Image (cartoon, rainbow over all chains, first blue to last red; front, side, top):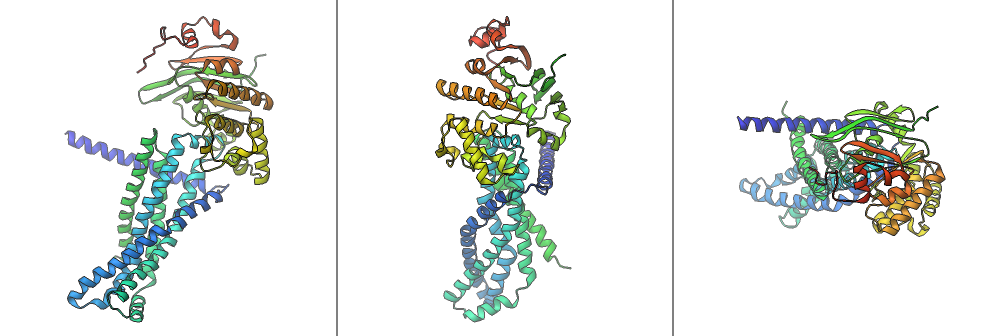
Amino acid sequence: MQFVATIGAYFLKFLATTGRLSIFIGKSIYEGLQPPYYWGQFWRQLVDMGYYSLPVVGLTAVFTGMVLALQSFTGFSRFSAESSIPTVVVLSVTRELGPVLAGLMVAGRMGAAMAAEIGTMRVTEQIDALTTLSTNPLKYLVFPRMLAGIIVLPLLVLVADIIGVFGGYMISTVKLGFNAANYMSKTIEFLEMKDVVSGLVKASVFGFIIAAMGCYHGYSSQGGAQGVGTATTNAVVSASIMILLFNYLLTAIFFSAP
Amino acid sequence: MTKQPLIQIRNLKKSFGTHEVLRGIDLDLFKGESLVIIGGSGTGKSVLIKCILGLIEPDAGEIIVNGQDVLKAGARGRADLMKRISMLFQGSGLFDSLNVWQNIAFSLLHNTPMPRKDAKALAIQKMAAVGLGEAVADLSPAELSGGMKRRVALARAIIENPEIIFFDEPTTGLDPIISTVINELIIKSVREIGATALTITHDMHSARQISDRIAMIYDGHIIWDGPAMNIAKSGNAYVDQFVHGRAEGPIDVVRS
């Protein structure tokens, strides 16, 4: 009986958190769409989230592309299907690995940073100070981050796609003996617009998730340094899980068999 | 004819879980006066001030500011009300991501909005009023001492000449000399702009220095309210114990 009660308590807690998160997101969007608009904050987030995430996303993409080419080669050579490697690399990177890995890396970098910054602002009364200065914290802190996440992650993923494919191309031509022109033509041959666009749409959703989770956990943090630490961990973990969950849902929507 | 209070609090109640912090606060604050609320740590002083500001939702009661019920005002109404009120936070509440002058001119830059050049000039003018030199304007809050942070927070609180200013433990953590300087700045600034001040503190030196009237909060109620000069002869055993800082007396020193 105790076991059932525990499960029930967890379920109720889950529902309550989902409700609070939905209200938080709804209020942030509603408030953010009303003037005045804080373009300075938006621009700052765009630079922090986009420009400063380029190295980590780029490195992740290039090594992913390289490993993908190498692994595909060792696997596909068993049944003489090496010629499929360019297609496998480009489709894997654009459809799945680019958006998911970029999303997870940005969740680790920016989701944590958002939760820590907003959480510190919460526990040091800076958010209360915003309210007393007639500034809605959701409008000033949360909405610009959400908007930046939606816009900037597809741009990062576009860069990750190019770098990831380049990583595969580099290994295939330098190490695996592929002809460069042949590799490029094979890469483009089976690539469809839908492959790239689906990845970019996923990236947009992931960007929103990262910002929403980072802001929500930071905004709800309580206590001192420990509370901020917990908020940061929760932001990264919940954003990562939601990225993987929504990746499946979006893949099912885009690519499910008719 | 009776004078109409600027802030009127009636039967204000607030609990956190089973812990009743405010059990029915009744308090009036009149225009132009400086009221100090004293009380031990954890007696609900900050909760009271945050309820008035709308930062915490009370469970019951009425808060009337300038004839308008804060709790029934709605988000927009409260935002309008906030434009007439400012606050100096216990930890100063300065924004880490902005430098000193941007902190002071925050409301001018984001709400008015005023050109940056004019806002900076006004911020520097207010910095001078609280004894800060222009060289501090471009520093970040992390580079300031505790006393300087309070001065910056005070400059930010008075930049738009608010009608009402709340001070939450304005001298906590400061040495006695800097505390006196901050108290004098508070008195000077409040008088200059003709504001009404509500201060919460447990520092009796500050309370005597800046108040016209003192009220004491204990066990969720206002247990004494009177002119500052009468605090030494209040005739209330709780107030006497608190004012003299005695461990022995009716105040339950070990609170659950």
